[in-house]
Length: 188
Image 1 (cartoon, rainbow, N blue to C red):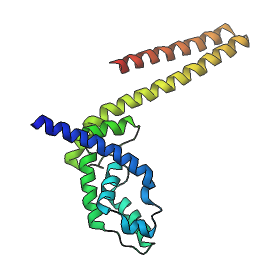
Image 2 (image 1 turned 135 degrees about the vertical axis):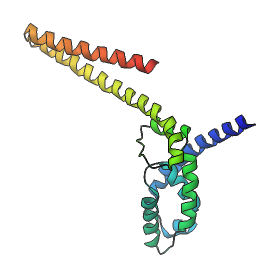
Image 3 (image 1 turned 90 degrees about the vertical axis):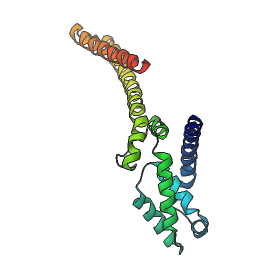
């Protein structure tokens, strides 16, 4: 029964993260809430979504919503928002969420998750972030290799000295070797 519970929690966490990302895109950070939106907002749910975004701290987000709604003459429910925020952190600060966050290329701010939950988040985030950075390095190396190939063609076309051409060829080989090593690392 424990396995089913854990699997169900993991599925819920993945669903919650996907829902959060979609809602965040739709809400656009709630910067332009009108009076009706401020009155109709489920503050607990919005707090949960904001926490699951993983970017700004509670006070920064809450201040933005407070100001947007205050400007519309509406009072936000700060208590409900904070309770939702705490639920959102529970959903966000998981290994599965950490992995998805890193795979999306997002950079985690240490201290965002409460200390007891941060270790779990980092368990998923750290290896996925390293793989993401390695994939980015592969793309950068491929770009540099193409530029070096172009430089070699131009050096040959311009009939540069043999020494210069050899120097460019060596640079190209070094970049290609680095790329092979990085691809081998990613294949493991």
